[in-house]
Amino acid sequence: MTGIKLKIIGCCLALSVSLSGRSQSNAAVSPTKQAQKKIVFIAGPDSHGKGEHEHNGGSTLLAKALNDNVPGVNAIVVHNEWPKDSTVLGDADAIVLYMDGGGDHMALKHTAELDKLMRKGIGLVNLHFALEVPQGESGGRFLNWIGGYFEINWSVNPVWEANFASFPDHPVANGVKPFGVTDEWYYHMRFVDQMKNVTPILQALPPEATLNRPEGTHSNNPAVKDEVVNKKKMQVLAWTYDRPGGGRGFGFTGGHIHNNWQNDSFRRLVLNAIAWTAKVEIPQQGIPSITPTQSELNALTKRVN
Image (cartoon, rainbow, N blue to C red):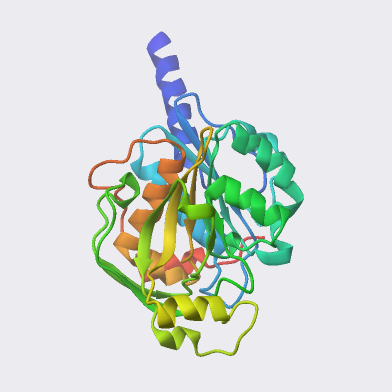
């Protein structure tokens, strides 16, 4: 009889682990006792046309890949809004923000809460539009948390093909092979002074055609034109940040186009980075994951209500 009870308990634990990261509601999901690292994705409402800014589908894909391939990780997803129960973040090892940014950034109403979490050493990842926050207090906070952000009238957001031939000797780059991807790659980001504690992971020189648009808050400005057109300065499109006092951050300017998650190196780099911010040891070959089929990606673009 005791053996039967143990088998039942084991099955329940396995079922709990298998469902982690697949919740379609805003309910807080507690990590199992077996989980050593808890990663919480906060996915904003999907925006733009189908296949673009698929925050829910992208977060679901990444969380599942982490749960399936990284022992001891419990990745969960909060869909469409900030967690109603903020205690879900209190024991997290890393938080991933994948959402629209700017003046409507969901995190803006929760910066004090986030600051307390960051001071505890919790990792923070900002993907794509989640990197844009207003200048001033909000921009200053994100500089402290992840080392950089998208600043209007300074940073730009063209769609272009970026090619990456080499990578630094850093765990986030483990197993990443040279690749090229067309995305809305932001660049000329605002970074901490002298890039202190920032490690560029993805760098590329944007073609001059990316600055053909008229000057505007997101399109062009004299400073970015001088760097790219005149000085030919490589632009940082993804970076890690070792936060003074503890904690890690990661910024990734891609992630606009949902189908790009099919690119194995693109996906591996982001998985590595999320796990790294949670202080997970990254395998030498990087975090493995199955390449999603087009039908699987399409299924993830169904809007979550």
